[in-house]
Length: 178
Image (tube, rainbow, N blue to C red; front, side, top):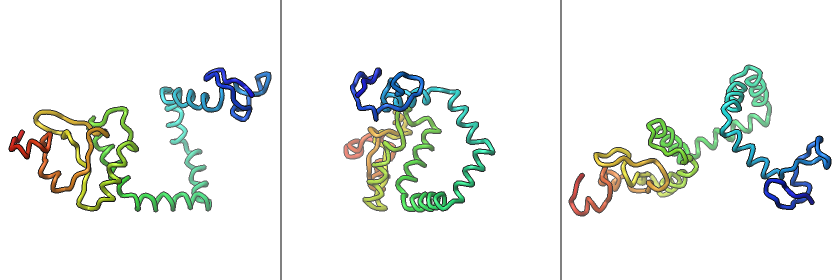
């Protein structure tokens, strides 16, 4: 048993990565702490991102990738990806809407496409008559909403058309139009 110097929890030796330079031949931080630290560092490291971009554009990487994809395992991965893309219409609609609206600066920085996917999956399960709608419209005379979880709802196409760019359904019921 060994204590992690980051989280101060005593864990079994298997929770620590090897390190030849230390006395006990193990890292001082557990794998979980090290992974969390590395992920946060890489997310903010511009040089790391530049190296990754350069690697993906290199001819060596492209040749290795092409060679791997020509193997049986690579062909299975390609086939599975294509099958999944064809069958998952909700996922495609989600990503299409997300990146289109992100380009228009209508998506907050903390929102990820996976957060919004359940709305599109629900609309897909309910049938062709349903769509994902914004409670506060993205474009209106009075306010501009955002493409985030708190601003999404699933409506019928007819209900969405009736709502238009009004803020609340009760406005229509009261006869008030913006």
